[in-house]
Structure formats: structure tokens, C-alpha cells
Amino acid sequence: MTESYPRRPSRPLGVALAILTSVFLFTLLPMMQVGLVVVVQQHFATLNFPDSGPQPIEVGGDFLGVSPVNMLIQGVLALAFLVIAVLAWRGRPARIRYIFVGAVIGLTLIKIGVMLVQVLSSPDFVQGYSSLDSLTSAFGRIQAGFELLVMTYVVWYLNRGPARAFYRGYFLPPHTPDNSPTSG
Image 1 (tube, rainbow, N blue to C red):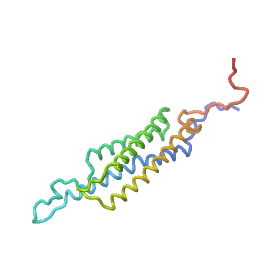
Image 2 (image 1 turned 90 degrees about the horizontal axis):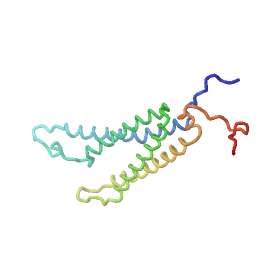
Image 3 (image 1 turned 30 degrees about the vertical axis):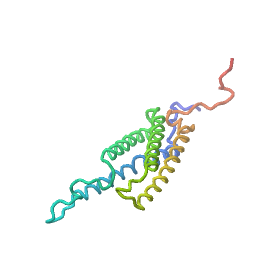
Image 4 (image 1 turned 120 degrees about the horizontal axis):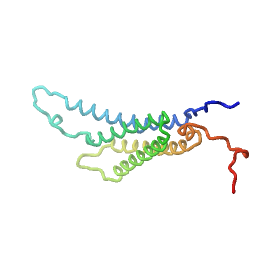
């Protein structure tokens, strides 16, 4: 009995895991960081000290060490990755698999490059150095290791047969001696 309509492959669990973990790493975490910086800056920008005039914290000091341009770039990259991830979740267009893998590799390399620049640069003792700086450096290394693992998983799984069939939209015919190509 042959089917009149070929069955479209469903999304494999591994593809769903790859997309969800990538969205967590490359969209949710960066957007939470941007949101936290914006909330803290807004909180300190709206502090009112009665009867004492403007305080140094109110006149525009950068107490977090994060430039608004960096936050804007991080937010735009996170939202662009979310769009790519939504298209990868749908499975259309078929080349989104390559775009998604390329985006994961690119963002991982960018994040590791930024982390290496921060680690290799010497601390600025004029602005101060605290134990929190070493703690955030350790968490950055853990996050970089996790990102490398996720990148490896995404590249590996999205090149497996079930993922390729999902993005292609159909299964390949089974390879049997009867339908093998003839040589010569």
C-alpha cells in the first residue's frame, strides 16, 4: 500500500533541544543582562535627594562600566537570533538549518573572543578591582564552556539524518540493492 501524500517528517526532539538551549543562551540571557543594566541605570537616574541639590550619581557617571552601544548591539543580536530560531523551529525555508548553525557558531565565537579580550587585558586598578570581578570572570568561563558544548551539539545534531529530513521536508527513499544506482 502506497501513500498518496508523502508524510512530512516531524521535528526531532534533538532539534527542539538544540533550538531551545540556543535561544536560552543567545537570546534570553543577553536580554536579561540588557534589562538588568537598563533597570539599574533607570533606578539610579531617578534618585531624588531632597534639599541637597544634584548629587554626582545623578549627573551622568557610568557606574556599571557598560556602554549603551554595547547594550544596543547585544540586544539587536539577541533579537536577530530569536528571529532565526523561530524560522528554524518552523523548518522553513530549508536553508535555515545552515543559517541557524552559522549563527550559533558566529555568536559563540564572538562571545568567546570578547571574553578572551577581557581576560587578557590587565585590570584597571584606578577604577578598582574587587572579588566580584574575579567571580564574574569565573562565571564567564563557565558560560563560555557551556556555549561551546551547545555549539558542538547544535552542529552535530543538525547534521544528522532526522534533522536534515525535517528541514528538507521529506524522507529519502530507503537504500536497498533493488534501487541502488547502477555503475558504468
